Image (cartoon, rainbow, N blue to C red; front, side, top):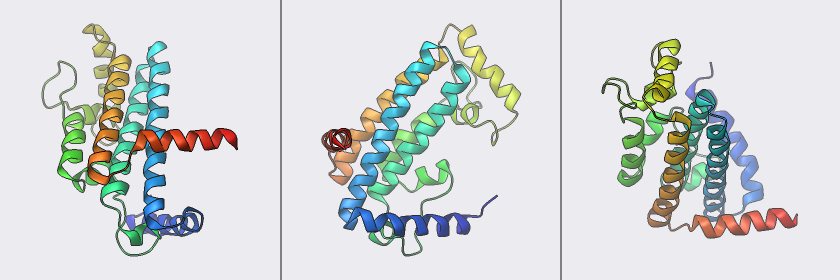
Length: 199
């Protein structure tokens, strides 16, 4: 298992290579946040397909990836230093979702904390959404699979619920990024995808 220091060195090397193609730190920050946004939109699309197939476990994995994507986007937009954008300095993105969320501005932190610390369906407060989404870290995987299945038993489509939630989070992400970092994600994403289609 790689240590935080190994992860940091690996990421810094990659960032130095990327910096050569991204230009100034400001441009680099904006492009990277837009890429996180586009990735979150892709997760929304995949979750929609997963919900149509009633693929509960696949939806849980996709949603967790979506949370990581949004948290990373907030971190790049609001926390990352110019040195980090150049692949220099000692600051680096935390290697866990929980620690990443803890570094974010209050509005972003509250948005994500509210989701990951919410109760799972009608289960007790001791069973949080983050525990069900990450069984490898939070308890017995089989128990959590049963909890996921219990959503349908309670008349709730788990896959559809996560799809709706991810769509709302991605929309709120774009709104908050504009407020916190002055980046108009919808506009920039449109330009980016249009340019990609021409290539």
